[in-house]
Image 1 (cartoon, helix red, strand yellow):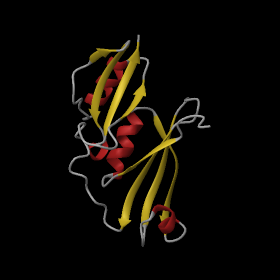
Image 2 (cartoon, rainbow, N blue to C red; image 1 turned 135 degrees about the vertical axis):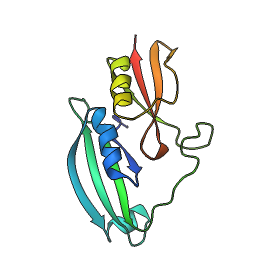
Image 3 (spheres, helix red, strand yellow; image 1 turned 120 degrees about the vertical axis):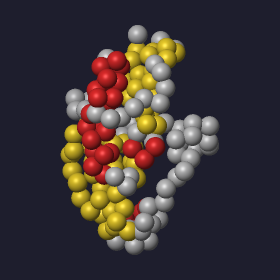
Image 4 (cartoon, helix red, strand yellow; image 1 turned 90 degrees about the horizontal axis):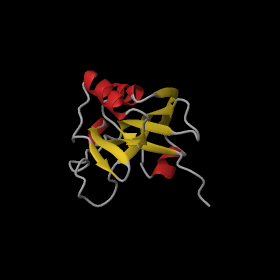
Length: 144
């Protein structure tokens, strides 16, 4: 039986910008290593892999919540021109709950990260979408 969410991995070209984005949401860097060759190449199905692997942990979250960032050195990463299209098949977005959505959104905007929607009230929550690293859609929610 599955117990809880563990982590989400995002491949990024701009590692510093991704660190900053998630840092503003309360994630702290736990470990940063370079993964290379075996067993990573076989496990991930990426021959010749060499990548920065950064684990960010959400402070004071129970259970532990991680975002893992991959910055490929080799092979060259493949951009997804449709990553932010919410009507495509496959991964859609990730959502994090907050106690104060307005304050989080203000902080993100003050640091150059824009919302891609107005705040919406839906199913006993206030919700807003952000353009996250590499176009991955990140949603924030605040339960009433």
